[in-house]
Length: 117
Length: 115
Image (cartoon, rainbow over all chains, first blue to last red; front, side, top):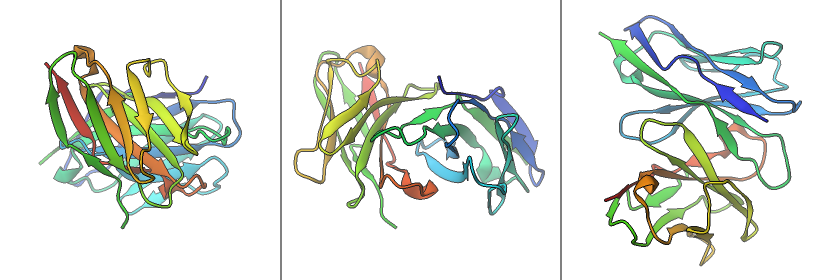
């Protein structure tokens, strides 16, 4: 069965420093997609970055980058130059391979990030 | 930029009452989902919907839950007789079904409190 594991319930980082949030996944599929979402205290789910299983390069989106190590089945999120507004819950999620008409996301437990001034 | 709209943003209901959570997905999207997140816990898949029928439902999605797309635009989640443990944030999402990473669009959620 597919599974996402986030082993860090909480993380602290100083403003302007970089932080890495861990995500490992388990799947027997060859084709899958990995997502990171940010959930601030207001509750909405904000898409940050995506990595496809066949993408050869690590994804980057502004201050966010994804350290994708396929052999280790890890997809860690790196946030550079942390800002106070980065304080939030961060979820790693995996999209199942194209199994018919359902492409649900499978979620990790999340990591709560606090950025200290 | 197109949005998924959810209403209401907050709802408080008494145990045993029926609630309907509403979602307006992006107009050209084909796949629709409901997820829920109990406070402080992981996001859980409830149901997916395609071509006017349920394509998959989780164990959580029991007979108390139903989904409809009554008029081709709205996508609703109904809980027939709410229980205290139904208190959660409910997210609607839609996707075009392609491989675009941005294909999943989430609504802002409905925070349901059952008292």
